Image (tube, rainbow, N blue to C red; front, top):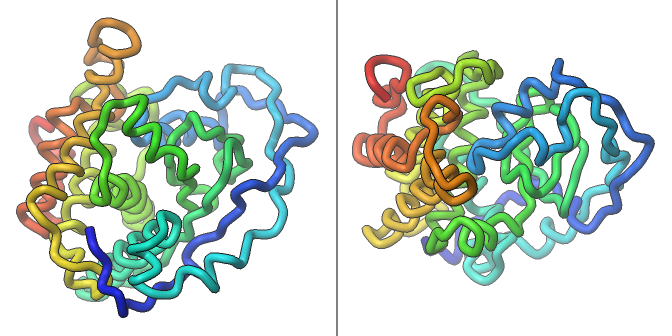
Length: 294
């Protein structure tokens, strides 16, 4: 995806705490409150296990402590579409700006107000309103504090560990999916119930709707003023990324078999189907993953 060089970026939508030291006093967490949300929501893309967060019952982990003040460099270095075309972190800022511009307009068209969510860049580990998280969690949305969290190293992992081809729209898909959860949160439909797993369970349906919302944004991305029109090849990048993080694909790679009863995010085919549905129709009203067969 190419940014329009003269587009004006808003880096205030991102807090950059990369490279800050985290650590601290340790806190026991055993399955309630923020942890319950983390188990479903923090593994938006990876289908990871609770062990990735050190979230086993009664386990004591570092709480992340104070990561220190956010860097102000993005504010001076990520100001235009030309910057987004030149640098990865500025590119991510641009995607976030475009995604939120779309949802702001969409909510307004429906007579409601979109409340923006910030993204926080971090390195290795961080304390959040949903509990402690490491880079192994993958990108995630935390409804308790209304932030999207991402270690930008995930985009390299997406290629090297999960076999995705990568590319600009693969990155944008990841972010648009997380902001899809923010939209669900604003609409009151985001679930934190990890007990409803399985190929047709509510957890999977929630994740697939976020995939569909990502496709809806992609359909409308060029209208936000930040990006040039998306190409067919770039759509293929997003579909490839969606397939790479399907529950069945990850289970086959890590466990040597597939168990649909334990799915929380959807199969590769499901995730591709719903991104495509959103992209083809360009309307969030077409993203009803909760009716019928997902």
